[in-house]
Image 1: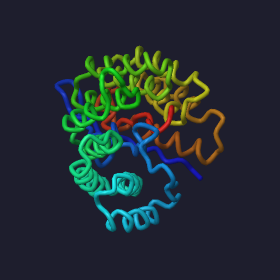
Image 2: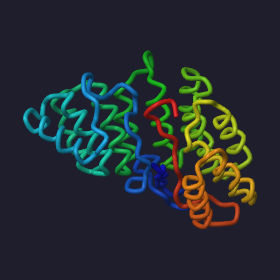
Image 3: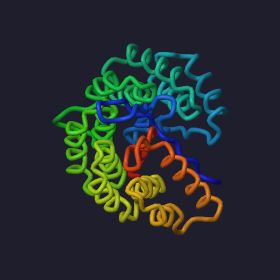
Length: 270
């Protein structure tokens, strides 16, 4: 199956073009990130591969007992996977009210808020989903993306640095850090960090995409095209090149920042 890359919207700042980030990804254009902790899903059930079927199955279970935390988690995850982000946030908000202090629920609710562009609220909720004495590096990275969406890039990088202390060289965190440098127009530094992420055997195809984008933004399109095409089936390579051309065409200047920016998935180590 051909992989589709979903970009995110980023908030405008004095030097940036507005994007959103539904997840880093905006809120309607944001990248679809599933679990934000890697362990917040239902303990005994696997989400069906078909998101619509998952919504139906878990929705029935949730409606039978809206106060059931596991049911709300499963339903919220399914709604997000199916693109029903506003409904997911509403379900998870009610679930956190019914289950105060439930950290997995708070983690997913914070992610859902970010999906909808509520970055400050998302950041605040995520702060309650873990603690300084027991931090979750995945949540630290998500909080960093929220700060980047608000144009607070230096603060965001401090969160990525904290995440990398716990998970050294994690390619997903490094990719988000690279994009942070891209947003502040430090393209050489962005490329340096993204190449480090790309060198990891655990790097996802989105890391490859991000590196190609930053290389292309520096005017080296042939090299960027080679990066996004390398070792991929022809159909996926063509899709990646088309995506790269589209993103570069959305730049606000020859060496500017695109109006949409993909972020690394944090569901696993990306």
